[in-house]
Picture 1 (tube, protein in one colour):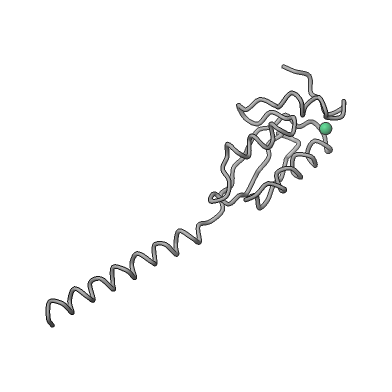
Picture 2 (cartoon, rainbow, N blue to C red):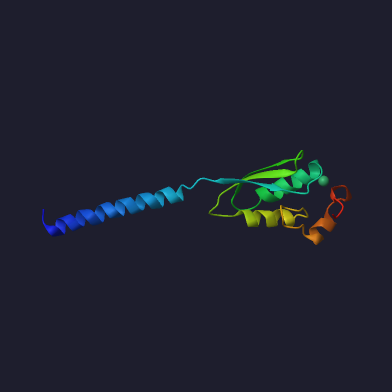
Length: 117
Ligand SMILES: [Cu+2]
């Protein structure tokens, strides 16, 4: 085999390896996080889940009222944990260390307004 042909095959196999890597990255799996919220009742649960599901990149959102934690399945190429916490805070609820948005909190029904700590 001449040197040129060898280099050609070398380049082709390199391209194949690289494109396989790109494919693997494109098929990246969704991630799941759990965020602690200040939800109180069923209506809080529905409100938070609705807001999250309307957010780009969110595949599933389930809030457990027993521990007030919302489990979110999302596409990490479209959103991230910080953005999701912000969605919850902007709905009027605490999300981990992110404090609720005061204006959104004021608009919540009285029964959903957990007293400020
Ligand atoms: Cu509520």
